Length: 215
Image 1 (cartoon, rainbow, N blue to C red):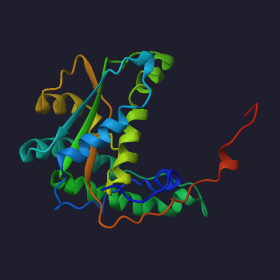
Image 2: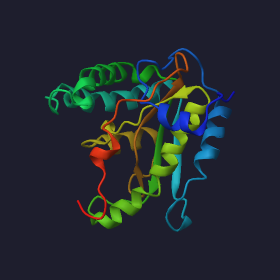
Image 3: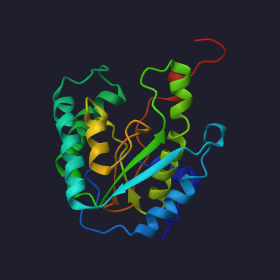
Image 4: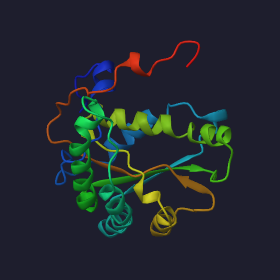
C-alpha cells in the first residue's frame, strides 16, 4: 500500500536505510515488480533499455553475496575517515554513518531481498564521456526504484563495495550474470522499514555548492 506522501516528501525523505530495515518482514514479489515498473519509466540513452535487474531471495545466494560485500566493506569502513572541519554537517554525521554501514555489512545476508541492477556493456577503460553516458542509462532508473520503494514503506541503501577487486566477478559467478557482457551498478538491500517517518537530511546549503556562469 502506498504511503500518503507528496512528491517533495518522497524526494526529501528517501534515505539510505540500514539499521531500520525490517529483517523479519517478507517483501512480496508483486511489490518489487510494481516499483520496478515505475523505475523503468526513467530515461535511458538512445532508448536502449539495456538494463537487467537481478533480485536475490535465496538464503544461500544472499549469504554468498553478503560475504563478498563484507570482505571489502570491513577494510573500507575501518580506514580513517575524512575530516571536513568543525561545524561541517558531513563531519557531524560521519560517526553515525560509519556505525550504520558496519551494521549493514554484518546483517546483509539477513535482508529479505538483495537487488543487483546490471547494464549491458563494459566501460572500465572507456574515456570519461562514454563512461558517464553509459551509467546515465542505469542510475536514473535505479534511483527511481528507491523512490518507489520509499513511497510504499520500504527502504534500501545504494552500496557498491562488493564491486571492489574481483568482487563483481565473484558475484556474477554466484548469480550467473554474464560478466563479460553486463556491468553491475550496485547492491541494494531491500526491506520494509521500521516505521515510515523519515526526515530530510542535513546537507550543505545549495548556495555553497552552486556556480553561475563560472566556477
